[in-house]
Length: 305
Image 1: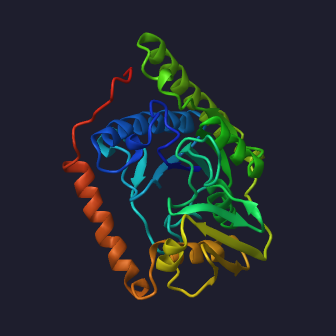
Image 2 (image 1 turned 135 degrees about the horizontal axis):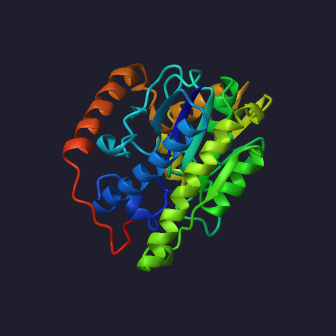
Image 3 (image 1 turned 45 degrees about the horizontal axis):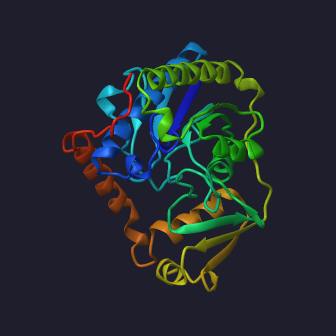
Protein backbone atom coordinates (compact mmCIF):
# COMPACT_ATOMS: atom_id res chain seq x y z
CA UNK A 1 0.00 0.00 0.00
CA UNK A 2 1.24 3.46 -0.95
CA UNK A 3 0.13 6.07 1.59
CA UNK A 4 0.29 9.79 0.84
CA UNK A 5 0.63 12.12 3.79
CA UNK A 6 -0.54 15.58 2.74
CA UNK A 7 0.61 18.33 5.10
CA UNK A 8 -0.80 21.77 5.77
CA UNK A 9 0.49 23.64 8.83
CA UNK A 10 -2.22 25.57 10.68
CA UNK A 11 -3.57 22.50 12.47
CA UNK A 12 -0.22 21.37 13.92
CA UNK A 13 0.34 20.70 17.61
CA UNK A 14 2.28 23.63 19.09
CA UNK A 15 0.93 26.32 16.74
CA UNK A 16 -1.47 28.94 18.10
CA UNK A 17 -0.93 32.15 16.09
CA UNK A 18 -0.99 33.14 12.42
CA UNK A 19 2.62 34.33 12.27
CA UNK A 20 3.79 30.79 13.02
CA UNK A 21 2.28 29.79 9.66
CA UNK A 22 3.63 32.68 7.57
CA UNK A 23 6.51 31.65 5.34
CA UNK A 24 9.83 33.29 6.06
CA UNK A 25 9.32 34.44 9.66
CA UNK A 26 11.31 33.16 12.63
CA UNK A 27 8.00 32.12 14.17
CA UNK A 28 7.22 30.08 11.04
CA UNK A 29 10.53 28.31 11.46
CA UNK A 30 9.25 27.19 14.86
CA UNK A 31 5.95 26.23 13.17
CA UNK A 32 7.90 24.11 10.67
CA UNK A 33 9.40 22.19 13.58
CA UNK A 34 5.92 21.56 14.96
CA UNK A 35 4.61 20.35 11.60
CA UNK A 36 7.61 18.12 10.94
CA UNK A 37 7.22 16.38 14.30
CA UNK A 38 3.50 15.83 13.64
CA UNK A 39 4.22 14.42 10.18
CA UNK A 40 6.88 12.07 11.54
CA UNK A 41 4.33 10.63 13.95
CA UNK A 42 1.89 10.04 11.09
CA UNK A 43 4.65 8.44 8.99
CA UNK A 44 5.38 6.05 11.84
CA UNK A 45 1.70 5.27 12.22
CA UNK A 46 1.33 4.62 8.49
CA UNK A 47 4.18 2.11 8.47
CA UNK A 48 2.88 0.49 11.65
CA UNK A 49 -0.49 0.13 9.92
CA UNK A 50 0.95 -1.77 6.99
CA UNK A 51 2.06 0.84 4.44
CA UNK A 52 4.82 -0.38 2.15
CA UNK A 53 5.55 3.10 0.82
CA UNK A 54 4.91 6.58 2.24
CA UNK A 55 5.17 9.90 0.39
CA UNK A 56 4.82 13.27 2.12
CA UNK A 57 3.25 16.02 -0.01
CA UNK A 58 3.70 19.53 1.40
CA UNK A 59 0.67 21.66 0.46
CA UNK A 60 0.91 24.87 2.55
CA UNK A 61 1.75 28.11 0.72
CA UNK A 62 4.80 27.55 -1.52
CA UNK A 63 5.03 23.92 -0.43
CA UNK A 64 8.29 23.70 1.54
CA UNK A 65 7.26 23.74 5.19
CA UNK A 66 8.48 20.40 6.50
CA UNK A 67 12.14 20.42 7.52
CA UNK A 68 13.42 17.86 5.07
CA UNK A 69 16.51 16.71 6.96
CA UNK A 70 14.40 16.10 10.08
CA UNK A 71 11.78 13.93 8.36
CA UNK A 72 11.67 10.18 8.79
CA UNK A 73 14.01 9.01 6.03
CA UNK A 74 11.77 6.09 5.09
CA UNK A 75 9.32 8.55 3.53
CA UNK A 76 9.75 10.34 0.21
CA UNK A 77 9.16 14.10 0.35
CA UNK A 78 7.55 16.21 -2.42
CA UNK A 79 7.50 19.97 -1.98
CA UNK A 80 6.15 22.73 -4.19
CA UNK A 81 3.43 22.91 -6.83
CA UNK A 82 3.05 21.19 -10.19
CA UNK A 83 0.74 21.55 -13.18
CA UNK A 84 0.19 17.96 -14.32
CA UNK A 85 -1.95 16.13 -13.74
CA UNK A 86 -2.93 18.42 -10.84
CA UNK A 87 -1.44 21.19 -8.70
CA UNK A 88 -0.36 18.42 -6.31
CA UNK A 89 1.34 16.45 -9.06
CA UNK A 90 0.38 12.81 -9.68
CA UNK A 91 -2.19 11.98 -7.02
CA UNK A 92 -3.48 8.77 -8.59
CA UNK A 93 -0.39 6.93 -7.33
CA UNK A 94 -1.71 6.77 -3.74
CA UNK A 95 -3.94 4.12 -2.23
CA UNK A 96 -4.87 6.30 0.75
CA UNK A 97 -4.21 9.89 1.84
CA UNK A 98 -3.76 11.05 5.43
CA UNK A 99 -4.19 14.85 5.71
CA UNK A 100 -2.27 16.45 8.57
CA UNK A 101 -2.81 19.87 10.19
CA UNK A 102 -5.90 21.11 8.33
CA UNK A 103 -7.73 24.39 9.04
CA UNK A 104 -11.31 25.64 8.76
CA UNK A 105 -12.95 27.08 5.65
CA UNK A 106 -13.00 30.73 4.63
CA UNK A 107 -15.94 32.41 6.30
CA UNK A 108 -15.87 30.23 9.44
CA UNK A 109 -16.45 32.35 12.58
CA UNK A 110 -14.09 31.95 15.56
CA UNK A 111 -11.73 29.57 13.73
CA UNK A 112 -7.93 29.70 13.67
CA UNK A 113 -6.65 31.22 10.40
CA UNK A 114 -9.68 30.08 8.35
CA UNK A 115 -9.26 30.11 4.59
CA UNK A 116 -10.01 27.97 1.58
CA UNK A 117 -7.26 27.43 -0.95
CA UNK A 118 -5.92 31.00 -0.71
CA UNK A 119 -6.35 33.94 1.63
CA UNK A 120 -7.90 36.26 -0.97
CA UNK A 121 -11.29 34.57 -0.61
CA UNK A 122 -13.83 35.31 2.09
CA UNK A 123 -15.85 32.27 0.97
CA UNK A 124 -15.82 29.56 -1.66
CA UNK A 125 -19.14 27.85 -2.36
CA UNK A 126 -19.89 24.77 -4.43
CA UNK A 127 -23.50 24.32 -5.47
CA UNK A 128 -24.42 26.93 -2.87
CA UNK A 129 -22.65 25.21 0.05
CA UNK A 130 -19.70 26.69 1.91
CA UNK A 131 -16.68 24.61 0.90
CA UNK A 132 -13.64 23.73 2.98
CA UNK A 133 -10.40 22.44 1.51
CA UNK A 134 -11.36 18.84 2.25
CA UNK A 135 -14.43 19.27 0.02
CA UNK A 136 -12.21 20.39 -2.86
CA UNK A 137 -8.99 18.45 -2.32
CA UNK A 138 -10.81 15.36 -1.08
CA UNK A 139 -13.03 15.31 -4.17
CA UNK A 140 -10.06 15.84 -6.50
CA UNK A 141 -8.37 12.85 -4.88
CA UNK A 142 -11.66 10.97 -5.00
CA UNK A 143 -12.02 11.46 -8.75
CA UNK A 144 -8.60 9.81 -9.05
CA UNK A 145 -9.87 6.90 -6.93
CA UNK A 146 -8.01 7.91 -3.76
CA UNK A 147 -9.81 8.18 -0.39
CA UNK A 148 -8.84 10.56 2.43
CA UNK A 149 -8.83 8.41 5.55
CA UNK A 150 -7.44 10.70 8.25
CA UNK A 151 -7.45 14.38 9.22
CA UNK A 152 -5.94 16.33 12.10
CA UNK A 153 -6.57 19.94 13.10
CA UNK A 154 -8.71 22.16 15.30
CA UNK A 155 -12.16 20.91 16.25
CA UNK A 156 -14.19 23.08 13.87
CA UNK A 157 -11.93 22.18 10.91
CA UNK A 158 -12.30 18.49 11.71
CA UNK A 159 -16.10 18.81 11.97
CA UNK A 160 -16.21 20.46 8.54
CA UNK A 161 -14.02 17.72 7.07
CA UNK A 162 -16.15 14.95 8.53
CA UNK A 163 -19.25 16.36 6.83
CA UNK A 164 -17.77 15.26 3.50
CA UNK A 165 -15.47 12.49 4.83
CA UNK A 166 -17.60 10.76 7.50
CA UNK A 167 -15.45 7.61 7.37
CA UNK A 168 -12.19 9.45 8.16
CA UNK A 169 -10.30 8.93 11.41
CA UNK A 170 -9.32 12.15 13.13
CA UNK A 171 -7.30 13.88 15.83
CA UNK A 172 -8.37 17.23 17.29
CA UNK A 173 -5.66 19.81 18.03
CA UNK A 174 -6.02 22.69 20.50
CA UNK A 175 -5.31 26.13 19.01
CA UNK A 176 -5.20 28.11 22.28
CA UNK A 177 -1.90 29.64 23.39
CA UNK A 178 -2.53 28.30 26.88
CA UNK A 179 -2.19 24.77 25.56
CA UNK A 180 1.44 25.37 24.56
CA UNK A 181 2.84 27.91 27.04
CA UNK A 182 2.14 26.18 30.35
CA UNK A 183 5.39 24.38 31.03
CA UNK A 184 5.28 20.68 31.84
CA UNK A 185 1.52 20.50 31.34
CA UNK A 186 1.98 21.68 27.76
CA UNK A 187 4.82 19.26 27.15
CA UNK A 188 2.58 16.40 28.22
CA UNK A 189 -0.31 17.63 26.06
CA UNK A 190 1.90 17.79 22.97
CA UNK A 191 3.45 14.38 23.63
CA UNK A 192 0.05 12.79 24.16
CA UNK A 193 -1.30 14.51 21.05
CA UNK A 194 1.51 13.26 18.84
CA UNK A 195 1.14 9.77 20.26
CA UNK A 196 -2.51 10.01 19.27
CA UNK A 197 -1.52 11.07 15.73
CA UNK A 198 0.58 7.95 15.39
CA UNK A 199 -2.08 5.63 16.80
CA UNK A 200 -4.97 7.02 14.77
CA UNK A 201 -2.93 7.11 11.55
CA UNK A 202 -2.07 3.46 12.13
CA UNK A 203 -5.77 2.65 12.57
CA UNK A 204 -6.67 4.56 9.39
CA UNK A 205 -4.18 2.57 7.32
CA UNK A 206 -5.27 -0.73 8.84
CA UNK A 207 -8.89 0.14 8.00
CA UNK A 208 -8.18 1.58 4.55
CA UNK A 209 -10.60 -0.97 3.07
CA UNK A 210 -13.49 0.93 4.72
CA UNK A 211 -12.51 4.33 3.29
CA UNK A 212 -14.36 5.73 0.27
CA UNK A 213 -13.17 8.08 -2.48
CA UNK A 214 -15.16 11.32 -2.22
CA UNK A 215 -17.19 12.01 -5.37
CA UNK A 216 -19.26 15.17 -5.75
CA UNK A 217 -21.57 14.49 -8.72
CA UNK A 218 -21.53 17.19 -11.38
CA UNK A 219 -22.41 19.58 -12.72
CA UNK A 220 -20.78 21.84 -10.13
CA UNK A 221 -21.32 25.57 -9.71
CA UNK A 222 -18.36 27.35 -8.09
CA UNK A 223 -18.62 30.77 -6.48
CA UNK A 224 -15.48 32.46 -5.19
CA UNK A 225 -16.25 35.44 -3.00
CA UNK A 226 -13.20 37.72 -2.86
CA UNK A 227 -12.42 39.88 0.14
CA UNK A 228 -13.03 42.96 -1.99
CA UNK A 229 -14.23 43.90 -5.46
CA UNK A 230 -10.75 45.25 -6.22
CA UNK A 231 -9.26 41.80 -5.62
CA UNK A 232 -11.90 40.19 -7.80
CA UNK A 233 -11.10 42.62 -10.63
CA UNK A 234 -7.38 41.97 -10.25
CA UNK A 235 -7.55 38.16 -10.24
CA UNK A 236 -10.36 37.54 -12.71
CA UNK A 237 -8.28 37.80 -15.87
CA UNK A 238 -10.20 34.86 -17.37
CA UNK A 239 -13.50 36.73 -17.75
CA UNK A 240 -15.38 34.29 -15.55
CA UNK A 241 -18.86 35.50 -14.64
CA UNK A 242 -18.48 38.29 -12.06
CA UNK A 243 -20.89 40.20 -9.88
CA UNK A 244 -18.99 42.75 -7.77
CA UNK A 245 -16.67 40.65 -5.56
CA UNK A 246 -18.11 37.23 -6.52
CA UNK A 247 -16.67 35.24 -9.42
CA UNK A 248 -18.50 32.13 -10.63
CA UNK A 249 -17.94 29.29 -13.08
CA UNK A 250 -19.38 25.87 -13.93
CA UNK A 251 -17.60 22.53 -14.17
CA UNK A 252 -18.55 18.97 -15.04
CA UNK A 253 -16.48 17.57 -12.17
CA UNK A 254 -14.17 18.64 -9.35
CA UNK A 255 -10.90 18.30 -11.26
CA UNK A 256 -12.21 20.62 -13.96
CA UNK A 257 -13.55 23.08 -11.38
CA UNK A 258 -10.29 23.01 -9.44
CA UNK A 259 -8.29 23.73 -12.58
CA UNK A 260 -10.40 26.84 -13.11
CA UNK A 261 -9.98 27.81 -9.44
CA UNK A 262 -6.22 27.53 -9.86
CA UNK A 263 -6.35 29.66 -12.99
CA UNK A 264 -8.25 32.31 -11.06
CA UNK A 265 -5.88 32.11 -8.07
CA UNK A 266 -2.41 31.55 -9.48
CA UNK A 267 -2.35 31.99 -13.25
CA UNK A 268 -3.18 35.32 -14.86
CA UNK A 269 -4.17 34.62 -18.44
CA UNK A 270 -1.04 36.20 -19.91
CA UNK A 271 1.22 34.01 -17.71
CA UNK A 272 -0.67 30.74 -18.07
CA UNK A 273 1.43 29.44 -21.01
CA UNK A 274 4.57 29.82 -18.87
CA UNK A 275 3.26 28.07 -15.75
CA UNK A 276 5.46 24.98 -16.11
CA UNK A 277 8.86 26.77 -16.06
CA UNK A 278 7.56 29.25 -13.46
CA UNK A 279 6.63 26.46 -11.05
CA UNK A 280 9.90 24.67 -11.77
CA UNK A 281 11.86 27.80 -10.84
CA UNK A 282 9.70 28.44 -7.77
CA UNK A 283 10.12 24.87 -6.49
CA UNK A 284 13.87 25.04 -6.73
CA UNK A 285 14.11 28.57 -5.32
CA UNK A 286 12.05 27.77 -2.23
CA UNK A 287 13.66 24.37 -1.77
CA UNK A 288 17.06 26.05 -1.52
CA UNK A 289 15.87 29.08 0.46
CA UNK A 290 13.93 27.13 3.06
CA UNK A 291 16.61 24.46 3.41
CA UNK A 292 19.73 26.59 3.66
CA UNK A 293 18.65 30.16 4.41
CA UNK A 294 15.79 29.84 6.89
CA UNK A 295 15.93 32.05 10.01
CA UNK A 296 16.53 30.70 13.49
CA UNK A 297 13.26 29.59 15.08
CA UNK A 298 11.43 31.76 17.59
CA UNK A 299 9.17 29.55 19.75
CA UNK A 300 7.71 32.55 21.60
CA UNK A 301 7.90 30.79 24.94
CA UNK A 302 6.19 27.60 23.80
CA UNK A 303 6.93 24.35 25.57
CA UNK A 304 9.20 22.13 23.50
CA UNK A 305 9.19 18.40 24.20
